[in-house]
Picture: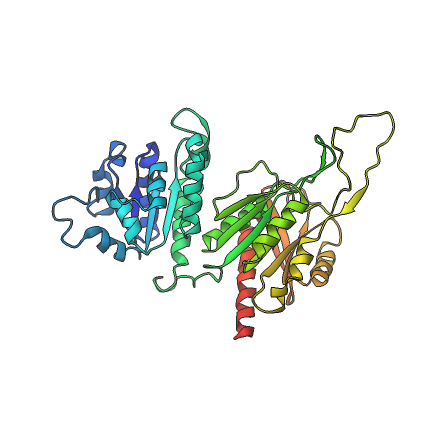
Length: 416
């Protein structure tokens, strides 16, 4: 059993923190609630006191609370700091090291993992200041449960509502299971991705024909986004290079937006210079118009001929990085989106490009591949093939990164 500090800040969804608390207890964990003064305007401390069986901490100025410098004592005792809901105000304090109440002081004092579940108005969530604060926290190793889409208390409909309590509990339990030396007996070992730099690409590329038209594909970016989010959950520092997609990217260390294959090539090669793992999940165009028209090409009664040229092969160029000649180079994961002889084509692609792992994807299936929420793939490496059955793309991302972790450990063993 672990002791978890449940921070509750001032938002209408504060009442849902009661469900989060119950869920953590059902998993066998002990909970101490830490409430801000604003949170007390939405729900009373006595509720959490009755559920947790512990005194609820609402102020660092409560008489007697400084006998043991309580925020420091709790900081040492907890295995996880979970803040749900986490307001824009709390996020800003954490990002800038402001310690003006018990919760913000606890955040600075503890060395336990920190998990935030943001909840706020859609415009607040999308404000550059909030986005920058979240990116800064994530870059420092803070974990985030992305808010959901739906009806908000302010009457708006959009992204910003607190994630479902069950999802927050699952994220907390998963994070606790990856705690290294502080893990309880029987917990999973720490992830091999912890503290590593991982680059993930996602989505399509658009190759302009003229200012209006382009060549593209049906990639939604879901698979790459799921991989980036899972790598973050495992403790990696993640750079996500995303092509044009309508989906909101997960909260990771850095998101680089690109449009064309050439832009993606430049962004990936730049990020790969300091990367430990590169996962090329994006559907990058193989061809691009040789000379895009400066103005819209007018419609005529005849046919139109486009001259296309090959784009630069990002995976092949990554495989040729000088650092790849030694163990310092990044481990490379490619994707092969095929519609026939899927495994054979993917196996050949892995061999030709000289990469460690390739993910074979039959995109002719209506329930897998592009623009759907499920996937079924075959993982191919030097040891053979492993089929991952149809499931959510989040589940597939876990299977892929499990294999990446295995390959990293094998490479490490060979070096040592």
